[in-house]
Length: 346
Image (cartoon, rainbow, N blue to C red):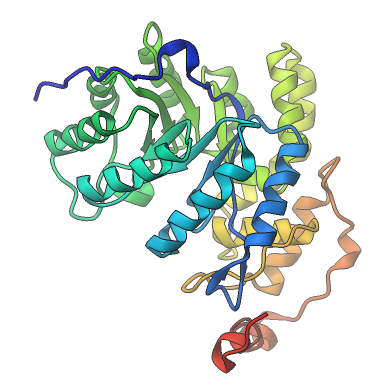
């Protein structure tokens, strides 16, 4: 398949580059997870910006993108982009199953000023490589915004291989690859492929943060930055200044939270873990949208222990009271669904 080189009408000199800490913004909810808490969302954006983050990803996986209704996705973009108002570059996920739906959501975000669009390859009944290349080519032709390839094969079941990445780089406004495979060697390979092109690599694996940045990634798309934006910004500043020893000392304090969210043995998923931890440090996140479930008392205790090492956003471990799981499992579900079941809103 021949890839047509698509020129970005914005021009190279006007493109806003992504680097450093790009927060995969979590989504505050209310009404038992059935509605977005818009006031809390805008407040959270301001808090992240005040911490000095370098970019924001709106409609991230951490932001419960997979569970949002089409009208909610549009509303979030229409609300967040004017509020951010150019303070940092903004990326919007516009992934959909079909080419036409992806183009529609991409145009909507681009028209509202998105600096780049993060797009998954079609998943579930995924096409052949030719179909994946066609998907990205058509989207890139439809919008002037930069395209971020999103490679997360463990979640999507589709891998953008290095060989496929080389082909996709022929599309002029493919500017970034977000790689979430968790393989540091792959990050280095993709960074080497990107040399001499307009494209750069972003890492989406939180526990690899300092090492990915040292291996050639220009930035982190970072879910845990919802919990510790100040520490994340400080870590990047150390690395950019060549202060590697200082960076790794800080990373020792940050690693427990990043590692726990990515993988643990007590059934705490990344999305509920991040929202629970953000609540613990004082952010208003609210409930999860079903089928995501509340974190158990055991999980909350483990999260609190991890948070206690953070130098800026750490918490006191003595705060948390919890029930044994056998006592609390039904109570957690009943409490989180009570407003939804009774029709209450708050």
